[in-house]
Length: 168
Image (tube, rainbow, N blue to C red; front, top):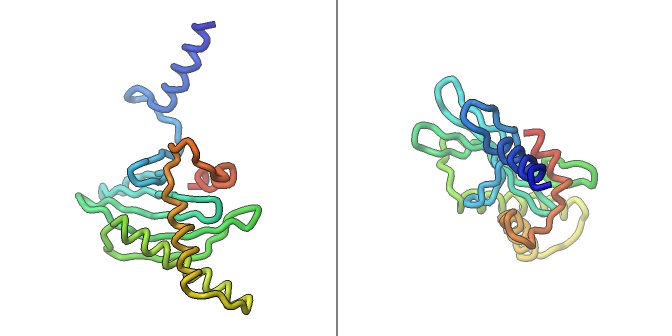
């Protein structure tokens, strides 16, 4: 029995971190320092590296498109998705040109995008909601996306986000 367990564990870890020269299983990688999954990494013909960073909570998903040029890290775009009950829909997108990636900038931009989306929906529904309440709600949603996946109380609808992670 111990041999079977050892073989299963060794096989599992060998697929996650294989020896040099063996292909690695293409799964999203959790980066706890950035509080996001890293997906779709590739290198351009010019030697620049690109990846997608995905953060989420139970209501929204934030997708960062990041470029590493020489020794600089740039943000190429931020996309904001919301769950519609069955799938995720793009609700906001911002493209950037030669903007250095900064965590405070990403968080601020994400909050502003959520505020704009919520303000638009409230207007469409002809509802009156104080601007402060919209701002507080946007801040809470974005803060929820920065919770560590490694926390024991991490409570999200991971099954709803997995298809999005696998798309990238």
